[in-house]
Image (tube, rainbow, N blue to C red):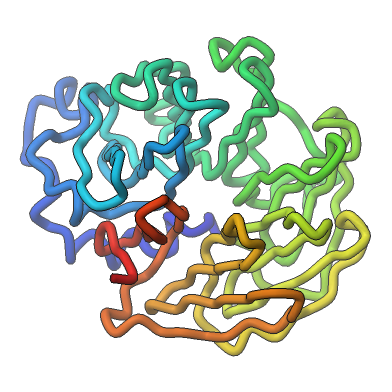
Length: 318
């Protein structure tokens, strides 16, 4: 499993034919994202916030922005048409995107203009997650154990090996997320969680009872950790990721992103329109299914309400 974007892109692609770029000169085709796109109906793989601004990324180099959570516009400059799978902002201005073809983009103006920091077209590199500890130190991870680290804000990247065991080192690394006091985690293939207690210098592979891949993870404000992924599996850790136990999710749909609101309630998005919600101290999730059955890929909580991204575009709970 190469992660969320590879699992759902094929089915979403045909449904979004109006956003597929026309045939062009090969060099021009990959130099810029298409501009004649309905920003509300693109195929999206991830979202985050840059201050109060919502930033969502997706197929064909699509990057859209919103100030109010209701109206979206395309970024002014995105110099790639590679699928974009992950986005992270250090503050309201500086951010990074990772995607297919080993692509890493950077911005310093809140996402309006992006520049290519790294790209390996033709090498079949798929990056699935990017995260920065500060403005200089960051990681990007992806398929077949691909792990990159930068200490200069993304200008240069070095490959990292997370394990000396080949069968562990080549697992797909799907979602990188931070814990407390310098802890880092990677939700990975075949129920594996990679854990670092020294800010990414060394890593330990922890095998859970889950046989499917984890697609997402999150450190919550109560000190616990959640990981979720294929076939509705949700696992919880209460000892900073050293051990994990299964939690009933009430669904067999694959789960794509975990989000904690300011009131500590937790949302988990999934394929087939599934949305899991947990409130208060109750660890149990309640399952809701959207009438449109859209495959949800992420969510942010804005002043205007929850905003979801999906393979069917931007969605709300209005």
